[in-house]
View 1: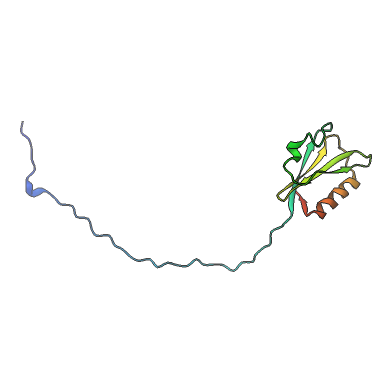
View 2: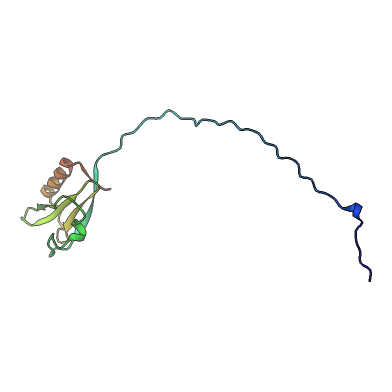
Length: 123
């Protein structure tokens, strides 16, 4: 069996072309004219339901994160059925689970309290 060896003159040298370098000028970003919209500084509060038999002190998982002590609100029967607690970042309105009827006077008191402390009910 014969082995094949290519002739030495057949060796091809590969030459790479020089890279083309071009300087790209830096373009400053374009700014569009815009209007600055003021953000609301209101603190958002959310509604939660708490059990009827538990005291506010027992509900540290609901009220413990807030700096301000929960403010209680009474319905027309004299029962404390709603509490509002808040801090600088958020808040909560907690209703007792047995509060099912809507008491207009109570809701007005809560709305007035929220407005006086720049609190806004979450949608």
